[in-house]
Each structure stands twice: as C-alpha cells, then as structure tokens.
Length: 183
Image 1 (cartoon, rainbow, N blue to C red):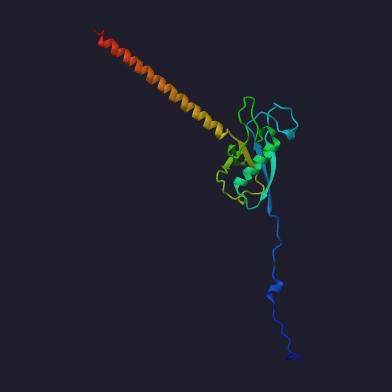
Image 2: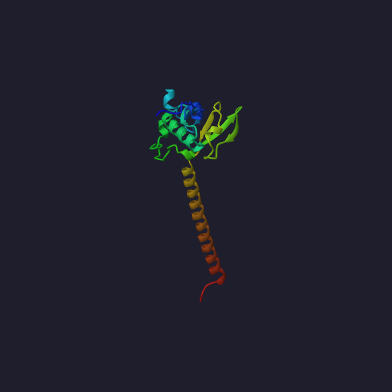
C-alpha cells in the first residue's frame, strides 16, 4: 500500500545553519627584551663583552592566554637570544645568574613613556592590541635581593650584639671603679 499521495514541503532550519569558519587559535605577539647584562645576544653576532642592545622577540601563544604565559614565553625566547641567561648559568664568581620569570617586568610603552605595567599575571592577553609592543625588562633577581637583605640583617644583628657586649663590659669596669678596691 502506498502513501496518501501528498507531498510535504517542511522547512528544515538545520539545513541552512550557518557555522563560523574556525580561525587561528594562536596569537603572535611582539616583545622587546631589555637585559641588565653587558653581553650582546648570540643572534646579533656581536663580540662578547659589547653593550647589549634590547632585542625584539616574536612569541606565539594561545589567544586565551594570560600575561603569566606571555612572560613565560618571553623568558624562554630571551634565553635563546642570550644563552648566558639560560637555567644553568653562573657568573665568574659562581653566582646563579639564570633568568627567571619573576625577574622580568612587562610594560606597555607608548610615545616613549611607560603607559602601564602588566603586574596582574591573570590579565588576558587579548586586552593587548596587535599593534602594541610589550617591553620586558630584566630586573635584579629577587633571590639575590633576598640574600642581600638576609646578609644585611645578620650583619646588623652581629654589630648590635657587639655593641651590647662592649657596653656591658664598660659598665662592668665602671662598677669596679666606683666600688673601689675590695678589702
């Protein structure tokens, strides 16, 4: 037995569903790394010991990344440009000089002035415009500063103890002098 002979012309909305074409999930950003050292980057081909110029880096990261991820990629790229900043690096005195993420400050420079710092590590990089160039400044190592503060505090404590000991000895001598000879 065949159907009733009628034809249905129902509109199927799924047939005409518009689906966005997926774009790139990565973002390429430019950053300028400004080191504290006096050694030129390896890619510059300059002789060791010459003044280090800032080096422009290109980093690729997911579009939904944070400033923390951006800083991490910049540090990795900077260590490639400046091998003496790699993780196992030490100076002539044996001090650790490796570049760490916490030793890099990111800044937004506009018209040769600091417009702002990216100090909120959870800030999304999609708030940074494509035309912006982020500057990454190497600053003194927080570990080194902590060691210097610790040494300073220990020195101050030692000096304070020495002064107190000297005062106690002086007071002891004064007491003996005022009491006179014992009989």
